[in-house]
Image 1 (spheres, rainbow, N blue to C red):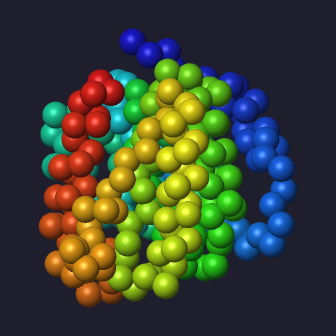
Image 2 (image 1 turned 45 degrees about the horizontal axis):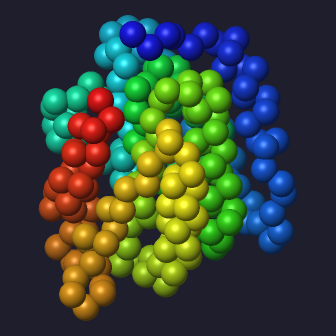
Length: 229
């Protein structure tokens, strides 16, 4: 059984999470992560009243995670969904302890990035937040596996697709040198023969996914998770 992570350990690492990476030039300001305090307080209340699975797979990230019916799509795995809509990679890094590490997960499935590119963040800045997240997890729980899902090719954010691809490339390269980090390309299968997003995989806003879109993600991710269990 994976050892539980104590609050004292989390607090000690929390003080260092944003100190590891050198400053980047021309960064876009991060949003205030405190806007999610009520969300995490509500989850803490729920956690105190309910029993969570041991060694779970924690899904974390923006609305693409929040809207995913992970318990339905992955009935064979002990999953916890901690998606919080509108979040950016900086938010996931800030909340990594309460969103992920407090559950002592065996695997973390992470999706962020398209909210970042939509506000003009560039690949190096987005990647640094993602790296900080992964290193926070690996520092506290070295055996926990982090699975980064690639940024999807959302039609409404097609003008930022080049930056999304650059971010994906940085994450893929990083994962190739870290045995506890994995990159999973869920975006290529969402493009048609013409290289454009497949309309049927997205709802009318051109950002969020239909059930068919989630079927694509589930089919790609299921064997990955099976191999990590």
